[in-house]
Image 1 (cartoon, rainbow, N blue to C red):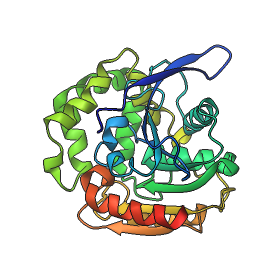
Image 2: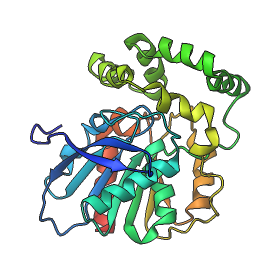
Image 3: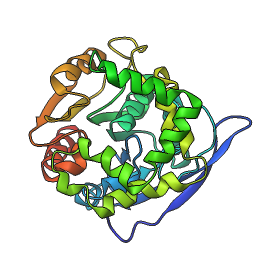
Image 4: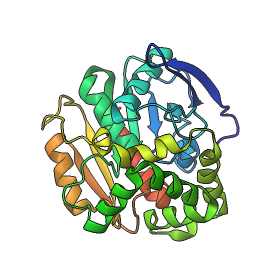
Amino acid sequence: MSNTAKDQYFLWQFSPQDEAKIRYQEFGQPNSEKTPILFIHGYGGMIEHWNLNIPEFAHEHKIYAMDLIGFGKSQKPNVRYSLELFASQIEAFLLLKKIDKIIIVGHSMGAASGIFFAHHKPEKVKALILANPSGLFGDTMEGMTSVFFGLVGSPLIGEVLFSAFANPMGVSQSLMPTYYNQSKVDEKLINQFTLPLQDKGAQWPILSPSRRPLDFRLDHLPKPCNYKGPAYLVWGAEDTALPPHKIIPEFQQLLPQAGAYIIPKAAHCIHHDAHEEFNNRLKIILDLIQ
């Protein structure tokens, strides 16, 4: 990532009683005539997970990236985390920066948050570029996975499992299945994902999807949803958690206009796992919509 990007923060009051300090970074050309881009990380992620992508586009575009509330270096309050909350954060950020229209590049849960925001505020979104989005799962959750999520959802067991997971060994074991090119899961990446787990309150956002899974799903949105603008699905062929042949058709019911691009030799963390191929596809998409 470019050394010129500095951490910036804003205080977000997201309810009459609650506020949180949110980290973001800015890159690129402030006077670019092109629509600005907002990169939104996935579950457990942070701005730095885009470090192989953002520099490729900063010479032509104004780019923003932020840590979702509860993740990265953003504050981690004990509140109800949900796609709705993340979408509200996107809206607050656009107001803060006086941005009328944005291109959202989102990964996994960040992509689902982008869809949720685009459904409710379609006039604010120029395009959605969705890397292995979560939120629609079809019948991909196997029996043992469902049992595991039920266990994590129980308060005492969830706390114990979080403690076992929130260390370099646990993070490594969690990241490995999300990469096809497992050499990318190196000490630097593991430390990058481990550090936020040491923060006060880190267990709340990490355990939320298993405790309230419906808060992280898109099933309740109408099909098609309200957003009718350009949309693109970019998927890793080897994503075993969200296999493209099962999940892409579900997202195309939500976004019938969405083109789908499957990148071989890439798994769930496609933008980092196969960054060159992902960046090439992103360039093609940006050329189409600018």
